[in-house]
Image (tube, rainbow, N blue to C red; front, top):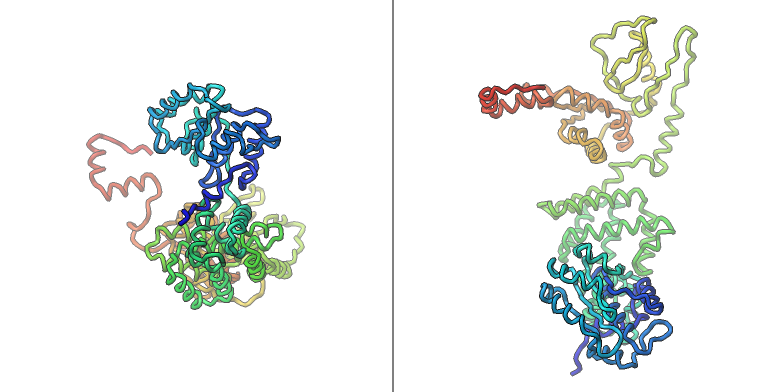
Length: 585
């Protein structure tokens, strides 16, 4: 019985032409060999399975070749090349730093460096996983690495360059290896299938390449596993079944159900997915990738970013026509947030179901301003009903300040006591109103001007009732939107008491007048966002302080916080009196 050799070893590149996906490394090393500009030490770093050790072996073989070609390739016929092929070369030494990481191992290596090669040009030491060396071993290696004998070359390989001390990095010529692209992996897999007489479709190649995640060695290991399972014919379904990959069809079906807002079918399909052994996190990651692919299909320039077979890419193009970019982007954002929160969720199944239901009704709940044609039509309608400027009498100073359009429909709270009239010779004064703040120039007449503007600027339309579900989704979205820039305001929105009353009056109750002031400073922006999100401008915002005991009021000033601390812990007052301390504020 013939012994089986895995594909990663059987088809390991033996020359520069066989190296996959590292053209920049190959070109540089070949030129260095031809021009005799070889450094004394090299550092090959990059992800696993991308060809670092393979390139190190080819470099060691090439620089010792006795009959080097004009293209910088080894001849494979000289004594040095034959001994290398039979693993019998005395000039090429491979050391695993993971198991030989002590300072004594490095001292033994330094002792061996002193002896010149018996045959060939160079003694080459390939140290794999060099980041595993101890700090003492690195220090013992420094001098030899910086000034080795002219017949010695060091090639270090690592997957974690950041663990290597800077003094080692400064003594090496560093080469960064890239991840192998899906295209290059498919090309190599097709070559191997042709050599082995195996038939496979494009979808199978794409699935294997995507599952390998940039590592050619992993792709070949998966390929061996699939061929063992299927034999000489491989299909995409075989790969999906063997690797337990969630099929593309589930994502396409889920997207169609979201567009149809079929919540029952969505929950049933997700239950079917979990019943097949897939966890919620795998589904969230895959569905987010699906939404990303739909988003890139909207621009012909980005279609090339799809790393799928032609048949699947055509499905993406068809479904992208029904999914708007704003929906795909909002869904991608929600799925990404749900994936981050998934790890801390206690009921993970419910967590994913809730995310899917939000996606289902997202188009009705939130309309992003500035995307699509709907907001533009609303702007045009408002411009038709805009008030016509009235002539200003000669003895009156024209008003130069007008309220912003987003705040025109907010009803302003009336003064309990009208402000005293201001004499003409006195300078202009600013009177603070509750929502919004408007510069006024005189006392009694100002209220009339504002009321006229309210009546004239309000478009004539039927009042639509505020839907609580949509309102609270918009309320939470605005709080999340400002959380990074206005954290205190977002916290107030999280803890405020909101009640939707009759005639579309939205009562927002907070704990103190200071919080009311903070709300009113952002009232214009808040109301504009809510109106656009709910597609409803006929509502009124009112801010008030919760009526209750004084003890429920939150402390804000330093003195209030100190008094609160004394109430909770009376020993603080006793300590301050004992030490004779006074609070200086």
